[in-house]
Image 1 (cartoon, rainbow, N blue to C red):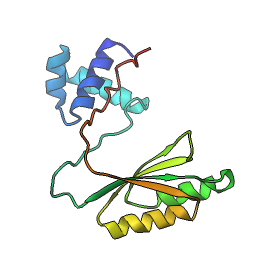
Image 2: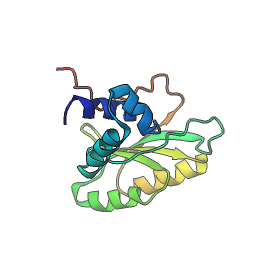
Image 3: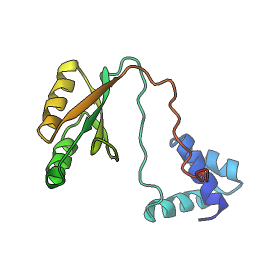
Image 4: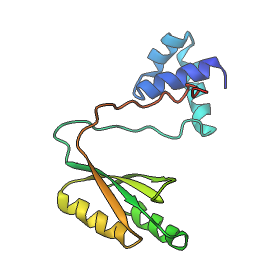
Length: 148
């Protein structure tokens, strides 16, 4: 991967809907050259997909929370299969500390959140934090190297 690939990836990370023509103008290449590079990066797995982040106030997901769960090693596969099958689960992190996993959820109602907590409690003790707001929502540029 060269500097141009990194610049293309950075532009796509900022706006995945940016046109090939606009990217080409910004990196001083032709549209076919940019299209070819993007296709190659997708084929190599560097670009794993494109997504839409909904932030509208009318969104149906009214309750966002983090459910911390302590799961015994023998129960991990069953737990992961269970949370993977729940549409309200947006992310699941395997973590260090007093819990094994932190499950991020976006639920329509408090009843949906209660259902997920109960489901997680089948695997072990839980602790839940409801997300009140997100004062910082900084998504790292995938092309930046971490500070060392």
